[in-house]
Amino acid sequence: MGPWALMEPAAQSGDVVLRMLARNSVSENLAADIDDQAYDVAKEHVRRNRAAIYQLVDVVMETETLTGDEFRAILSEHVDRETAAPTELVTA
Image (cartoon, rainbow, N blue to C red; front, top):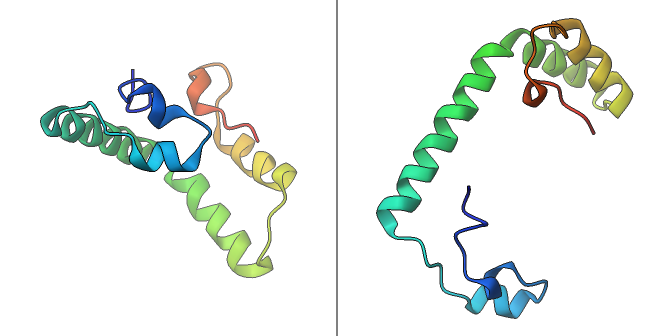
């Protein structure tokens, strides 16, 4: 469950105007709870993957570009495939 599922159907439309005009049917408290949970999940991902993130930053700072294959190769150095949850493996 997430913010997308909690929006009115018009907010999920491909029409930009309808999306802009659609009212969100989520209460402010529920939206804040969802945001807080998403923030906590994001922080945990950063904590768990800090070494990979630092290596990615070093490569980008040096080369200014990074291909998808290079990105996956760096991540694969930091992921234990036997214990990793499916959401921990990044695909592009």
